[in-house]
Each structure stands twice: as structure tokens, then as C-alpha cells.
Image 1 (spheres, rainbow, N blue to C red):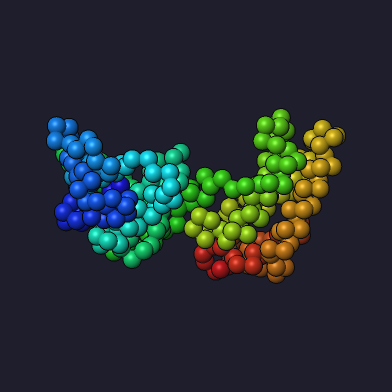
Image 2: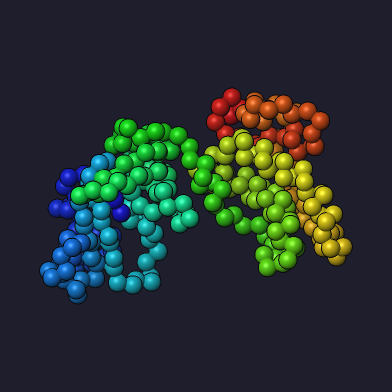
Length: 278
């Protein structure tokens, strides 16, 4: 974890002790480069390094295995942020996009951020982009981060039952996978940030345009099951959208919607984009 705040080291041991259910004496707060003065018997260790830029400390926290505890890294970050009145930067759910992290604020907010690291002594960390305004990072650009949406893996049980992930035709049927994934996004209120750009929604509908041709390319024995799944997902899409003649999407995506299939003329019940089509 990376944190703001000058007085973190003097106050964090009791916070970690409460969080992990141990005593303060069982928390070893240690310089990351000092191997000689460690308490190797401590059940919780917190290695610290100083930083420059927007952030002040790097904290590497480790504990004995405690399978009965259900708290997550986000829970720990929020506990530290609220208890110490600092912002805590911690890892995102997306290891493939290492430049995206999450931030927990003293006010209980959690959002995605883009952090930059510059080499130096100490290393200099800057929060370049944040989904929300965080007063502690006044220079950060406040905007959405669409990269996190593409990386989010959502379940597609209908397609999986018809064309399992190991099936040779799975790649061919990506438009079907994507179509079901869109309805799952709607059902879950547009994770991970309750937002979805209209441009990506247009891409989803363009993939749906290809779907019937894609199904026609499948082996004969796979076509009818895939078509049945498409019809089930179509029904879900109808239930999660409203026919507005395409007006909402046309405004949001700034594209004309004419001579299109029926699904282009329906808007989500809760449009997830910013701008005039919201």
C-alpha cells in the first residue's frame, strides 16, 4: 500500500492490531532495508519505505495465515484510510494493467486511479488520473478510465452451457459471448464503476449485428443451440431496455441511428454514460 500523510508510522500499529485481531506488541513495524532488527516472531509485519511526490509511504503488510478472516485488501485499505485520515493506494483487480490502482479515501470512497512512478531517492509517485476528485491530489486529472471495463471478466452462463470455453468454436462465437456479457453488465448496474461509454455500447451492438452470420458459420449441430441462446439473451436485453426510437443512444454516441436492427432503438433503463444521452 502507498499512503499520504506524515504521521502514519507513529499511528499505524494499533490500526493493524485491531484489524488483524492481535496485540500492538505482535505488530512489527520495520524499515524495509533493516533485516537485523526484525521481530521474526511477530504475527503482523509492516515494512515501510519513504516516497516522494503525491505519496509519502510505501507499506508492505504481511500476516500469518488466518483462513477464518474474510476481510479483503480493500477492507484493510479503507480501515487505514479512515483511521489515519490518509489516502491509501492499493492494487486493482486487474494485474494485466499494472498502471491502474485503487484509492481509498478517509471519507470512505474507493475509486480507480492511474499512478506514475519516477525513479529517484526516494522514488517519486504521482497520481495522474482519478475517477473522482480527491482533494489530496489536486493536480490529478479527474475522468473515467475505460481500460478497466474491457478487463473485467463477467460470467456468461448461457453461452458457456452451449459453447464451453474449451470448445473449438468458442473464439468464433465471441459476438454471442459479448452479447450475453452486455446483459450481465446491465443486470449488475454497469460494473466496476457504474459507468459505460456509449462508444463501447455501440461496439457491442455492432457485434450483435454480426451474430446471426457467425452462428451460420458454426457446425450444423451447434447452430440451433447457439440460436436458442441468442434468443434467450435477446429476451433479457428487451427486459433490461426501453424502446425510445434510438434517441438516447444517438445523442450519447453522437451517431445517427437509421435502418438498424431492433436492438439499436432501445436504451438501457439506467443509461450508463455521461453526456447528453444520460
